[in-house]
Image: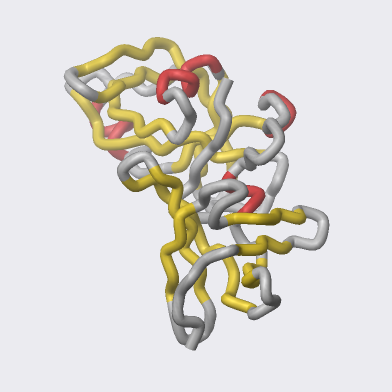
Length: 181
């Protein structure tokens, strides 16, 4: 089961869904398309046969009919998508599952959609902004923290750079040495 789910942006404020990937470009003529998984390990995305795809600002259920490796990436065939043109309309759309279908995160692990929008402070109490989104870079999970003047990219390393997460208070505490001004 996935330890973390990533999202490159907040597609919806509805917390009953968690984004687990993104559909990519179409492949072939019969409705296949590339898929970018945000699960760890990557193939865990296929443990969920019912995906929700964001279309016109609403989550639409779709069923995974087939998935397979193609070179170094995964491709998928969704029910009802029979032509390249149909698949192309879904390119770059986020893939979500119902939160109720996911396992609870372990201690020190968080679904990225739960971290987005949280306020960030240093352990000294200096406000840094809010988490806009997270991404993975060479094996490290990176938080993008924005305020009115700056954008900071800080690695999410539990108990090292990130020393506290309080989901109830919507606050992340960092121990990170950088110029605050």
